[in-house]
Length: 256
Image 1: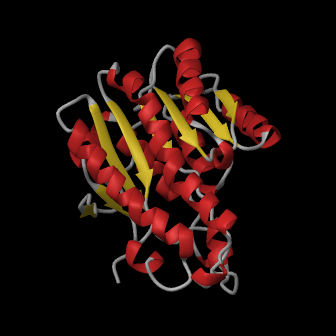
Image 2 (image 1 turned 180 degrees about the horizontal axis):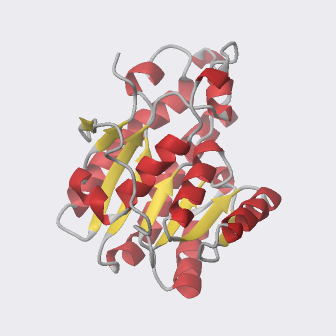
Image 3 (image 1 turned 180 degrees about the vertical axis):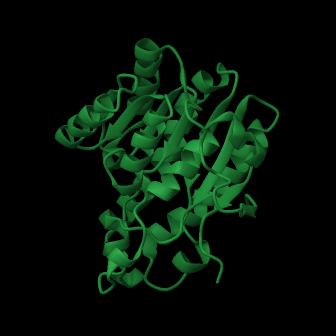
């Protein structure tokens, strides 16, 4: 597994224009963390490829990025729950045609239904959790690796969850997928550590997101920070400074 690393406050802050002339793909681009990453990476100079399920929210995010004066983004509507290997191959080919390169991926898409006993989770719920949280990032990365390898410095950022927490009762398919994702990241790092492609992971603390509200519906989510702090760390990992944490999971949780 990728070892967890903590940095001093502010150490993972991206420099201005740290992603200039880079192309970055963000999945779940209209979700809480994904949207924050897209805006932060665009502000750092990246040309963004915005992947999400619904066109209208993607178009609104497109307009926000244009208003920043950032490079014009591209939108790519895709429902990861039903995506096939051909869909991911077509995505990689479309990025190559439209952008000419790919320098980074942030796997921010996530799917979580609700806490429930394993015996009550339907086959459809189980399958969707594995597809969005595990199969999609694996197959998308596999499809994009040839394009990433052409970049002089490329980074893949997986978003982890606390495996001790989601390995407990009632986390079901989501918990299983997040455990497996940590294994995938470790395997990918070992296979690419001598190449120009870096593998990273990000382990945020609690954030003010829809996923947090779904898992802790009795909690006042407003006590938690907006995802912008985690997005800044993701952008730092994508840039050259992030190479210091190659093969590591950046732990943003507050120490107990």
